[in-house]
Length: 357
Image (cartoon, rainbow, N blue to C red; front, side):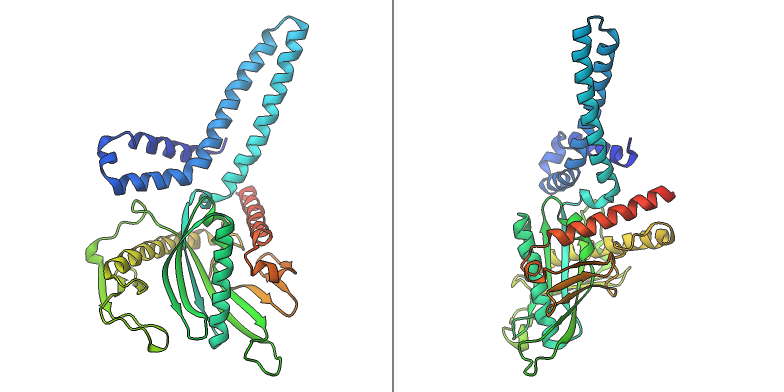
């Protein structure tokens, strides 16, 4: 019924077979990679299998209705058949939602990057507010967060924060947070009560697996240096900070959060692979842009996607025109209404695109 979902089921069953291979079980990293990929595909595999089972049950029930001669038995079989058909139709709607969600639904984890933009100290404080908002939302969804980089300012803001977020639906829910976020509010340091405007950027990248992105060590340039803290404080005496450059693409990642150079290298590699995967997907999206890019899913970081207006307690997403007068609650992590609105808007845009094809 949905070829894309059948392909994902086939991939899931292929991975199931791989986990029975003794060589795979002996390779911990490979086994964990397969289990991670299966975790992303499990929801679709379960739903498609259930749909197939229902189709078989309906066929058997229809035969019973056709062959039964006793009136009471025939009525009972017909009632059972109607119930199975109703369940199948409901399942078909669920499969349609999974199909129109694209590959995001199968992603179990993502990399989120938050950076202060224009606005000086106020922009850094706003970036910290965004970070806290997302962390609360992750906690509500029982997602696991691993901090990869956190560069704080002396006033309690952040210049940059990078983290890995994993759990069912994490990337699917957060994928549309990428872009420019603008805040309008009166800073605590403002003595005359004037409203200031500042900005921060957010990027949400699908975390790449080793299968998706394989990097040749010869394509890497790795530099080490001493890590620095806010205002030049807490400077490490050892060269634990790592700057990793992927020469073919020019993508650069710098990680200094850990005191261990080895740990910083591992974290930098994870972020680098995710940025390479994002670049590849952006190239594919660009080729299809005229025909099928949804407004909400462009993910351009330079695009202003949302305004947080504190005096009016209003948050507005400019891609779909959604305005919610609950900014005080959303900034505390109560993002469900906002996230659901974006996902539904994207779903409708995808359905329009499918109808045109």
